[in-house]
Amino acid sequence: MQLHIFPGLNDLSVAVADWMVETIKTTLQHKNRCTLVLSGGNTPKKLNALLCSPAYIDKIDWAKVHIFFGDERFVPLNDERNNAKLALDTLLHHVPVLKQNIHIMRTEGISPEDAAAAYETILQSYFPSHTAGEEKSFDIVLLGMGDDGHTLSLFPGKTDVIDETKKLCTSLWLQAQDMYRVTLTHPIVNKAANIAFLTNGTGKAASLQQVLKGSYQPYMYPSQIIQPLNGQLHWFVDEAAAALL
Ligand SMILES: O=C1O[C@H](COP(=O)(O)O)[C@@H](O)[C@H](O)[C@H]1O
Image (cartoon, rainbow, N blue to C red; front, top):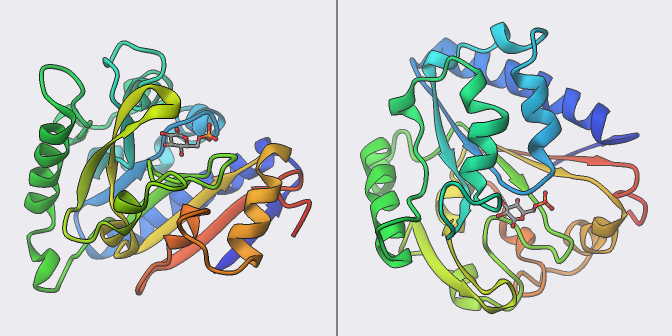
């Protein structure tokens, strides 16, 4: 695991943008596509703005990048809480990514269970060797961590979802937010080649301390379950989040 600490979200976002440029370039040197998982929440907004800015837009061969989502809030695509809406509005509508290569988790005209199953079908078509070897999972997974230590939609206490190993994607009801969620499960994420957490702000300091320095308690701090099998794990954090490390 590599921990990178920056003064604030601006520097952190620049570092992640540079890391993405290099990682995508390296990936495309040995294959003709790069699969990238985006996270939701507020943290990626600055990164997204950078990636579609004149300084960065031409540094990534977007036509070869295939976009996935780590999790989705089960609200319509035009709802401000929808993770795909954020990514479309702040990044994907502004870079030359191919429309057919953007794979959002459906939230309309379908049940949460069926949306998760439909996403799993897409994943199986990308990674048919998931159980047989070769390309098993994504090239890059970007993750956030909530103040409570959740990542993806793996929330503290949601033991069935945290433990899920048979499905690549599943759904859950989150009483605290009065909504369903759809989420990748830990096995496919942990088979990724590169995983990067983006974490900032004092509100995350206590959980970050437990996740990185505490004993292994994934039911309390689900971010701990993200441990790549063979890939690289990076934590990009700001000084406020790192204050208790
Ligand atoms: O609800 C969610 O929260 C996490 C963390 O979001 P942040 O606003 O603290 O950055 C996010 O990674 C996840 O995708 C999202 O669904």
